[in-house]
Image (tube, rainbow, N blue to C red; front, side, top):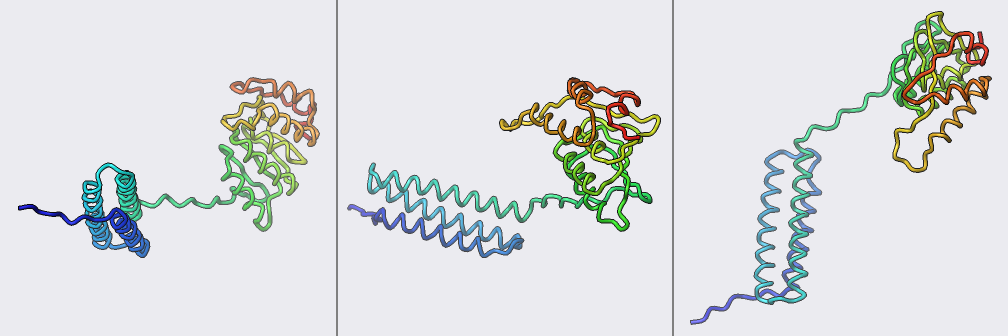
Length: 262
């Protein structure tokens, strides 16, 4: 006695796979942003059951057709379906249970006392945002007091531009070094306390961007210093200092070079 299995045409198996996947993707898309766990697991179970049925249908079709182009097409389609189910399920699980990334706090204005704003610590892009907000205060500060060992050149350039546009006087009380000097030089009136110091060194880019060149970036900022009245010969000496070293000129040298205006 012979038994005959019902053969499924390859086109029918492929259609069942595509339509089933499309239907389940529609179900996933209709879920709310944070579905209840029972709904999420129910969809995942249903998707898995449909996938297993589709895979068994593909397997039976491949066995009935034997090695052929259709067998390769159906095999690849089955692997894609498995990947879609896996990534869809993991994506939904991550939305439901993984903690959301911490919200980025908007930068607060710099500390202001009377007409003096205080910029302290590392200079980064939060510093730039804080400076912008500081200048919207009423009344706005007229002096920016600096105490920073530097930071990001790009952020320092932005803060320096804000200082120039606002016409803020700059004053060092402590240390102003590296990128901080860009901000200090932006002030039309530049002073420092008796025990303060201002430090310079050459550039080194911590970047893999091939289009950036340390020498070109250094020349760009050298031009900004010169535009503020700083002596070019002084800058040549300052920027010749190795990046891992620092030159702190004397008060007399700073005044003679035009770094200090008073």
